[in-house]
Figure 1 (cartoon, rainbow, N blue to C red):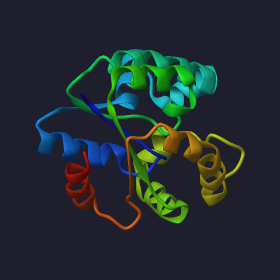
Figure 2: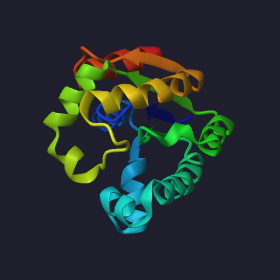
Figure 3: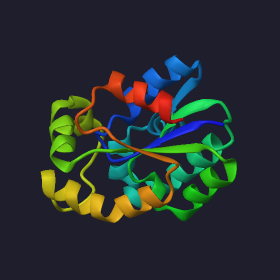
Length: 170
């Protein structure tokens, strides 16, 4: 069974995913990287040319492929779980789904500290900063929680601490 990391942008899915995969001796796969590779465009370029709808369709194709992988650590994009078909594909595969929960203020700090985020990720609403994070989290968090095997608050944890706790939880 694979371990699937979900959570908001900046929660550490990619960073923790790489470390966790190494610790568990599994392959690490980032869904966003797979989408970029298949589309041969950055996420920002996909959004600019086709909008969020096209991106979400590409994402669903990638999730269907990733769900078949039985021995990996997989990091999903923050909005991946919004689509029922993605949730169904992951649920039917029987993967361990881990929600990396993080407080909005810390998410904002992490997002602002990561230059790749603003370069590669478009805003998803007309809001900015903490307002966007709080708005999207209020819609996404119930979905994350309803589809999670394990939830871990990562707000005050380093990536290494998150990995140590996850190894015990999964």
